[in-house]
Image 1 (cartoon, one colour):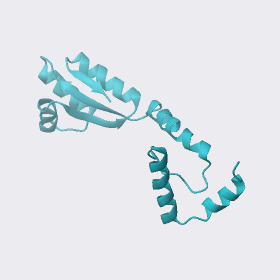
Image 2: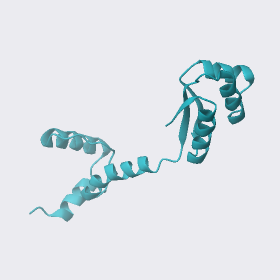
Image 3: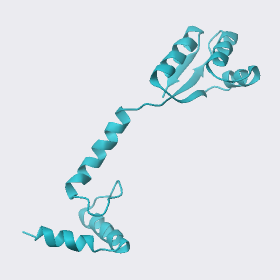
Length: 130
């Protein structure tokens, strides 16, 4: 079995260029590809935790976009709702409604996105929350 302490000391002494070369060599030898940069001195076990942490971040999404996908039969009603939800003027709101798909709100909370979606759907529009 390898002397792990000696291995840690040797890895800690590597320059950035040597560490990059080591990474390339390990990728070629093991047939894998590094998915995230690894901090120097990071335990090998923590490398497996990085993808799990990224998955948790996606599940805890806090910002949403409201995208108008179809205006339906009540164009004027939809324009009125768009104006009430955004700070757009009449011409800008009309342009947003006519140029489908259009992102009406960006990086809003889940409650704000769902509220906007329900108001737009009540006016006859189709909306995606992303």
